[in-house]
Length: 238
Image (cartoon, rainbow, N blue to C red; front, side):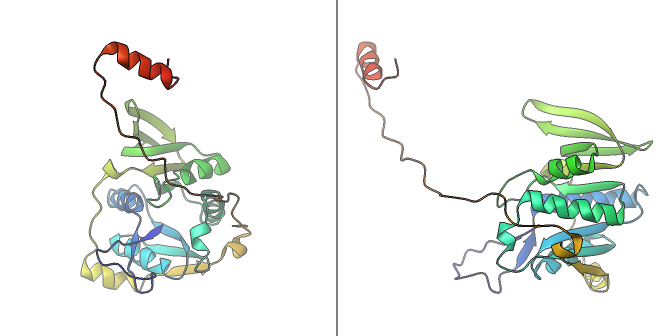
């Protein structure tokens, strides 16, 4: 996924604004490239859904070490309404077409923070999943994954094919070098649309209203415990 790179200067609109790859997706691509360097995988195919500017993001991934790209083009202006369910459906169709052994996604997008696509995709494919991965090791046709959870770290083992999502602590993404950027311009990007894949991307959820949270009232000092108890009773907290 791509997002608009923030600048200090305030501008009207997004024309001419550089598009940058979603940070979690950078971790996903870096992990795939490292797996290829270790001879664990043979080919890396990157896919992105969005308007024509998404090709910038795909070219960045190709410069990092991916072999070819797939651009599922969504008309500009409607890409903001592309919800995780639609993306998961698109990716499931691409999996049927490409038949990979492993799908790696970023844990979440930093605009909506949904953290849903990986789980939805794994469910559609009926594949095991390893979400929020901070360590991934491959051996004997299985992946051992360390997941970051609320209570600490969790180690799981999944068989292939599988779907995993990358956390920021999985690795340190590399910078694309100038020679690799030039090579990426010659790598193939296949273009298609959701309609070509038979996927309806009509939003299922609609935002009805967005409001600011209520302003927090200032605190009040009381002279003693008995006054505190009275105040709490007045406000219905006791």
